[in-house]
Image 1 (cartoon, rainbow, N blue to C red):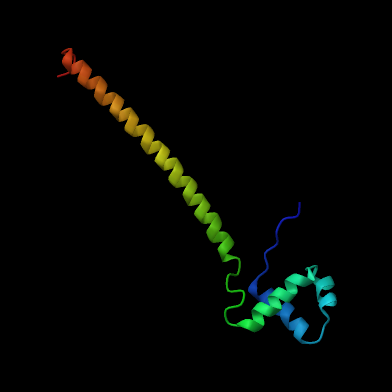
Image 2: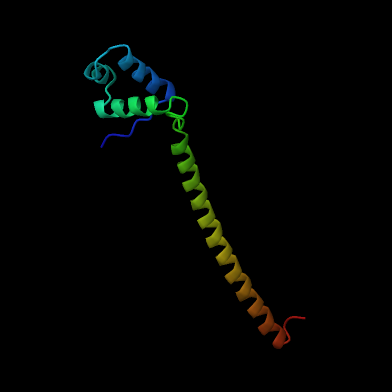
Length: 105
């Protein structure tokens, strides 16, 4: 299985400009190893709104990875908290029992 490649905003704009200068879609696709449909999508995105086109710049992927990492951390901390609450409850019950027997003052 191939890994997914991430392209920078500058690279995508350069590809779109190659198409604008008159290079054929097939030629740009072959030279860069990119599927023609992806190049067409980039071209359409760029002409729709050049300022906002490709604004993600791979950041969304990094944000999603960070979010997943933080969610795992929250889950682990939640489990630790539950464990400690149960341990505290058990310890409190034991202390109460020992106080009743006069072992704890």
